Length: 66
Image (cartoon, one colour):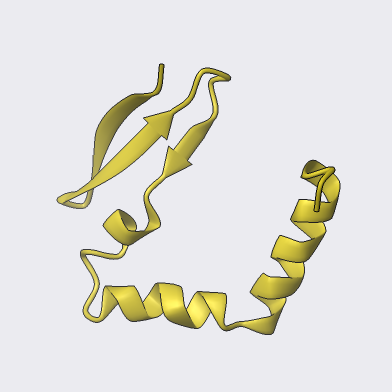
């Protein structure tokens, strides 16, 4: 069963999901709530070529079906 907990960083609550394998998943949208135009930060990050390259390498290493 997945567990959800919340941590507070500089007054902003961030949800953290813990799965059965003890992996933590942090909510990126919660992390950007404290910033002006926070959702644009994620959009800019995903449009960055270096980010796309990193995600491709990560998938090749950790996702055998990629």
